[in-house]
Length: 481
Ligand code: FAD
Image (cartoon, rainbow, N blue to C red; front, side):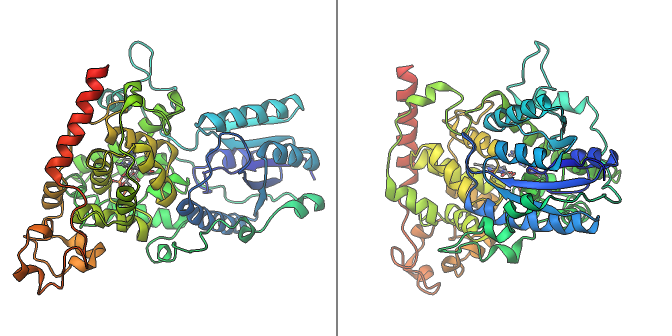
């Protein structure tokens, strides 16, 4: 048998539009597909627990899809550089293929591995499998990366997006040498799913990881929710967004596939399509920012915010995490996150603003909680959006623009349908009272079975006072500059 070609899967758990897999299959060599669970390489952030749940499902689905093509996914655990080096040596591979990553620690790791392999005479081919355009491709007229989204979007709209690749029809599977097989691990051995407690129990009712499920979800979204997306996407009580984010995070679908599936339509939904695709471009923009600012999750982009005087109120943080702040829209969002591993975008902005401004809590605490509890926890999207909310990021919402959680709830969840779904103890309240139960009379609270401070918390902060405190803290920051 000819020397095999290796395909290393990393956050690209799909067989269609997977340029690394397609290129490997095109060599005609026998293919060995593998994944490495690496918690040891320096600087690579460990997965959050919710992401672990999704990854488990993703790897299982990819293995099934590869088996249908005549191949299989082998799993390893440990230092990626040591394992790749060993696989290449023991299998006598002539080439290796992977799709590129964009976090600094991952780039450093991949660069080192590539150098080692090339020195040993192994061909290394790498591809863009994750983004519409890679972070160094889109530049402003001065040749610099864009810092503002609107001109970035304009620049993207002038370029074409490469068409997605079909899945290979078959793959000639290579044979793994016995001693490598001995060091491979079973999926369950990776212990990716949360245990003690298994708080992910509810996820399976709402989510189904894997490429086939992503494909169905995209098709359903384009047929049913895309019409009206631009108008409806801000209303959390309506199921009006694609919910593709975890599938995109784990590369079960590609932005190229989404782009082309959306733009072939020509049915009067162009403004909805443009809005939807602009969100997918935001994702690229977040990656561009992460690539050029590797510390996006840990350091404020605007360094002035490094001196911000955050309050370190552990009880307030815990109330926020548990969805017990006394502000119904905030609590509904935080409970949706805990139950479903996902939160609607509008509500992410509301709970983020509440944590950073009403509770004066460092945005990094929110970023970390989302990192652990979101199924779509993404190194670029999460860090960028938290800095956007906090006002410290590139092209961010100004700090002094403070979301009023009551007005936001009344505007975007007017009848309280979303609140009723996630804060059942308030379900008996009429729409007129559900966003401010502390103002409701006993005659309204009593029949709804609500005793404030007992069945549902009173607000942990007063909105107006919290707003003033946040603005004062911001003024102090400016005065010190
Ligand atoms: P749709 O509206 O259907 O959009 C389609 C796709 O576009 C999404 O799947 C997503 O990949 C991308 N997208 C949409 N909005 C944004 C955005 N604001 N920034 C970047 N990409 C976007 N998104 C993540 O994928 N992972 C995260 O960890 C994450 N953390 C966030 C934290 C905060 C504080 C905020 C305010 C937003 C965060 N987002 C994150 C962005 C956004 O909330 C989600 O991408 C979106 O809610 C996913 O739902 P959807 O797939 O139905 O989106």
